[in-house]
Length: 136
Image 1 (spheres, helix red, strand yellow):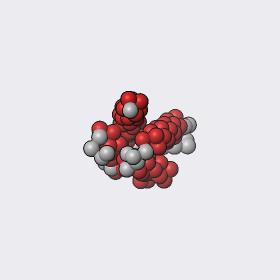
Image 2 (image 1 turned 60 degrees about the vertical axis):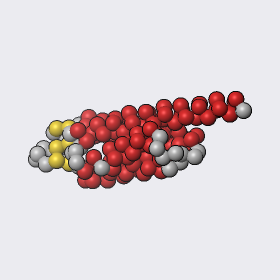
Image 3 (image 1 turned 180 degrees about the horizontal axis):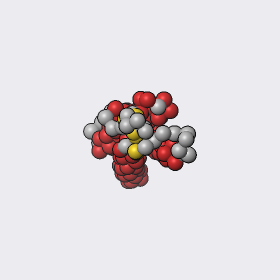
């Protein structure tokens, strides 16, 4: 059902992954210009993929097991994106010109938190359905 709490959590994760990347910069370069996710193709693609998985997962409410698996896949994708950001920020000074990290680098953490909350709610629903089936 679309009125469940996991829908709200997944929608917030999708908005974080697709909407806030245009608001918050990932970092500032040496010239003082803000670099957004749309400027980095790898980061932009991974953010959009994360948002798409969240939106698809919302409409998989009839298949809770698949919804749960999509949530785990989305968590792995966001952890990989976070790893890419850590790698980019820790490279040698001549290779990447990141002078100041922005809040956009922490957006995958926010997405992970909401996806974990959604997975907990999906698991709770699945356990409730199993307990009702056991009583029949």
